[in-house]
Length: 535
Ligand code: NO5
Ligand code: ZN
Ligand code: CA
Figure 1 (cartoon, protein in one colour):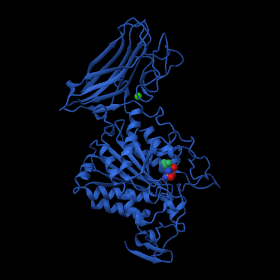
Figure 2: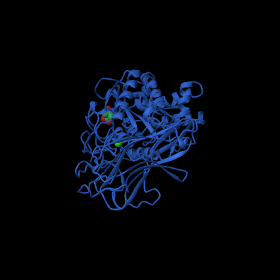
Figure 3: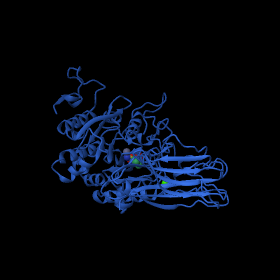
């Protein structure tokens, strides 16, 4: 890059505005001082990713997730073998620079970009990864903060964004306290002067909104395509996994399966780079952090990497000399490749591939595109299917069970009690809920597995009950039916395993039906952990 010597230090010519006649204007993009020229300013980063995109048009697309408070573009790279086509591949997100002073983190993002693009077509491992994944990279979420940091002498130790708060108050929101999951709890500050200011409201920062909207845009057919992510920070040489908001290892908003998988992935990555793996809150409590929202709402298995150095205190730990960039970014390459490789089936790392990585798995903890009354023909007047945390009811024994099989949520008929055991059960007909589409392989037989409960009082009749239906190419086939009899039956989770062989190679949807026909009686049903598995 051409350099221009001025009274303000050496400035890359590319950084100068077009109308400035060679003189720097006060609002131009600042650059690193010569001794740290190995680091990338915002404009240098942009130039670099443009170069990568033009060098690798077969696998790289450049776009943006939006703009910062000051109007800078927040750039986004997509790396994949078919960069313009949606092949339904597992997706992985890497982002950097939530915090302005964490200078090593955009270098980490650029290092990943080079690793994947330079290795494509030459390194078989990297080629296989790029061919089978969609990799997203946001190299600088907070370039406004970086620009401000670089205007110090030499730096300012700035952390937040540069969005003004109420008149007379300090500037900036901590972007890693502004995400909308349990925002406002312990581990963030309501004081605009604080380094960990949470913002006036969840998503009050344009940068977090842009990140949120991008991630939500990857929900396709109700299902989140992004399976795993790493958000890069400094420092501490740590790999952190959710949650940050609580010390509990497995609160009710995390399943046992995910807890084991997160911990195992973190420990395996840590073994490769010499970092320490721990739950995020073991460092300190945070609320409104990125990992909590991406796991809590979207079930993305995410990690915060706190890069070099491991120790030290004071502001210098954010500013390692540029001689260390290569060593401290390459150090994480194995962890990054490993996470990319496991992202088609993260449960493989705890030996659960067969049970949980088939054509479909829904623990029903978050919305994944099920549709109530898909055909508009349901007749039930109450107690229709709802996904969520079921409330326990009791009428001569438990009827709606208050506990899910996995986590805390399930699909239940009228999940709230509305005040009494018979206030929100199925009434007046049938209620249906239909899954998103599931593509069954032609080559292997598959099984539909789920847990269900059906409860009723002794006034029930065989006109009441629970059914599982396969919907395919407009045809509806009942594959399981549990009809009531005139006895009192308490709620109890039961296992179901159904042969899907007749639909090999077809696209199907699973429909759950609960019904109370004829004389009204108390009928409650619920379903959890719907899976389609391979042998
Ligand atoms: C992070 C993690 C605890 C997520 C944060 O030092 S850092 O600010 N990079 N640590 O507090 O957001
Ligand atoms: Zn940070
Ligand atoms: Ca569940």
